[in-house]
Length: 307
Ligand SMILES: O=c1[nH]c(=O)c2[nH]c(=O)[nH]c2[nH]1
View (cartoon, helix red, strand yellow):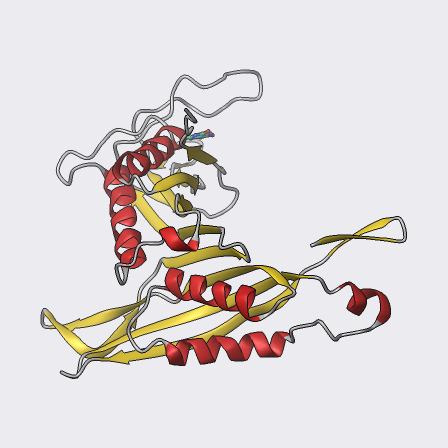
């Protein structure tokens, strides 16, 4: 919200960050599902008197926002995707409060995965996985909507089928060209859905959960290539683009995708004295590092032709 005051411009928003909630859903035959979310709410509303005059009469307390998360979680009697939960919260804040013009809801899910014991899925046991599912939803009073989903911390590595050649060489360059190296990264990705209003959201339950798993599969499959032969990567840039392109080609309801793929370096180990070669690097012994790392990111979006 931007408002003019005494010849100046005031931009303000308020909300509650990191409201943590766990929710269990139980079927009649005794199977439990579980989700743990960290929910952040930001409301855009006219709160000028609070900033200027200390008049809080139009402020929705952030404590109330926190309570609303628990009330809405209680009301979800059936398992729900966190995108749908965020949309529901956004709808609530923009319709329940006259002064609220838009709500931005961000959720990060803790990666609890159903436990398998001797190949059999456990009815109520879960263990913590690695990468996290994220979402950011903006709901406007008009019903206009913006939904993004994403993944944080998807760490992937391949020990071959990667190289880097033909880059700029000048008096500062020492990096040798190679067609044989390790490729490691921790993917952060977010994609935007093309649904632009509350009425165009798919009614299918858990639609967004299914999409999340399928997008993750396309990203990972493209990164690695087929199990036996893999796929050659001429650069992180090229692999990133292939991953983004594969997602847009496969999912018509995704309009853009942003990928961040740090190039996490594994340095060759060569050890020698003046007279002795102790360890000669043969693509086998590495020094793992996490800094510095290359930082490579790009956004790929459809250009929508308006006829
Ligand atoms: O895939 C890569 N992209 C780069 O831009 C780069 N720069 C670098 O030093 N190594 C690499 N690798």
